[in-house]
Amino acid sequence: MTEGIIEKYNITEGGVDVEVKIVGKKGSLKSYELFHQQISPATRALLDNIKQELIGTIRITAEEILDPKRINALKEKFLEKAKELLAQKLPHLDGKMEHFLTMTLMKEMLGLGDIEILLGDPFLEEIIILSANEPIRVFHKKYGWLATNVFLRDEMQIRDYFNVIARRVGRQITTLTPLLDAHLITGDRANAVLYPISSKGNTLTIRKFARDPWTVTDFIKNKTCSAETFALIWLAMQYEANVLISGGTGSGKTSLLNVCMPFIPPNHRIISIEDTRELMLPDYLFWSPLTTRQPNPEGKGEVGMIDLLINSLRMRPDRIVLGEMRKKEQAEVLFEAMHTGHSVYATVHADSVFSTIQRLTNPPIEVPANLLMAVNLNVVMFRDRRRNIRRVYQLGEYLLQADEGKDNIKPNILYRWNPANDQLVAHQKPIRLFEELSRHTGLSEGEINNDLKEKKKVFEWMVKHDIRDVNSVGLVMKLYYLDSEELIKQINQNVDPKVILKDRDKSKW
Image (cartoon, rainbow, N blue to C red):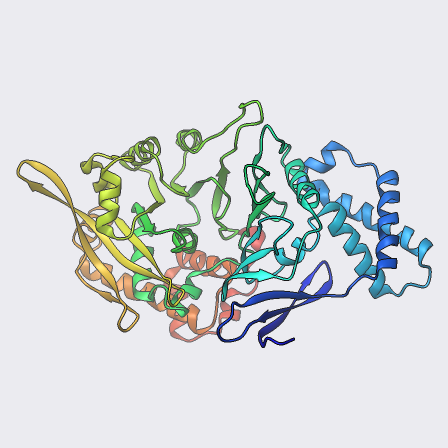
């Protein structure tokens, strides 16, 4: 190979090891290359023959196709029959090769072929098929957009993949309905567009669902946000403040929202509403996730964001989490929920605290200025595209000011990001937030500051001991709510986290 290898690593998909190489050199575009065991033409012909026999011998019911819970049973039945046919055709096949060939058959008949390997790479965020004439492209967390060495046979193969995805959700993609938005069994979101609507060819976009989502520990370690700032967000959420998270596309709004969810007390009922299921909360939380549904080919059966939002108010929620606020109707219901005593968390597209105010008070959302006073905290995310880093850009609150007889909302920036030293620094003291916390909790400003120091200590302890998976972070939060004095005492004594977290029966969470 003429180009240099920048990085290589192995991934395992279906028990089969695959090597990944990031290839490139100075002055050229990088590429993503998969290296796995090749199948000879003779073996390929044999596999095609086995496929035909499997089609004739394994009967698959509509319920098995549509029910994700029965997929594993179907796969077991399929594997058993595939091994039986391979043993007949190739009686002296070693176990490793038998496994490789059966998994290949499984991927090609029940899955998405080599795309399954790409889905198994934890460093990939997006997988794009433009047409059969171009390589599959991927978005790598470290290297951005990369062309792969994976090509699809023809447009019919892409159509077959579309049909596999559509059947899983009980839908069809046809010339009359050339668009499909669905979820894979893995939770990944798939969007398909048929030719000629997509003029290059049949196009598939898969956005991967995070298998190991970011947590507060990760965000502090990679300097996305500071422990001090997270302590303030935690305090606000603990006492049922309403929080908006703003930012541009790809700035990390939903990731931050997910990171902050464990700050909610374990005895509070949470209803989340999303277009695409992205939130992943600790097991112990009292959580009901709701997702929208698109209409069927006859235009019936749609369940929209506003339907779920209105319905959620009848489910006795303590906390309502909205994936993204886009429309006036959603904003009206959401702000009404805030004013009726529900704690609300939502994301919105805006680049600063001031522009968030402008976006909410002007079309298309157009919320009356006085309603914005229900928002207690506004966190703004920012993406530095040159360095490919994401940061909390601003943390602010809204202040109501009378200007010539008209109510105006002004921002009070509490923290702001300093790009010169890549630090989140304090800017102004909280005014409304501390006043309202004192009014609702009876805490003095001194007690609030002590509480913030305590919470900061918890975060620093988690970072020091690398407590970072969702459920471990969630368990620390739960232990804090159950007995904060005991947890802080053990942290002060530098007790090993394994001792603090051991013997915690998840069934009792």
